[in-house]
Length: 76
Image (tube, rainbow, N blue to C red):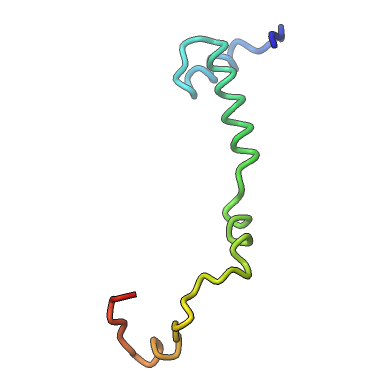
């Protein structure tokens, strides 16, 4: 869908420099796509919160043995 919009020449040039695109339209589209993707991406905290309640630790993991100086045999 084509649009006609007024965009500052300085902003278009900054978009071209930031994206590496030489074509103005390509630079603007790429800058918008990157911006939208960044806004939709999960923050590190959101990613960690998704892990809550998941079984991520082996059933035979024993933190007490590690604190007591127990050595891991390296086969896990």
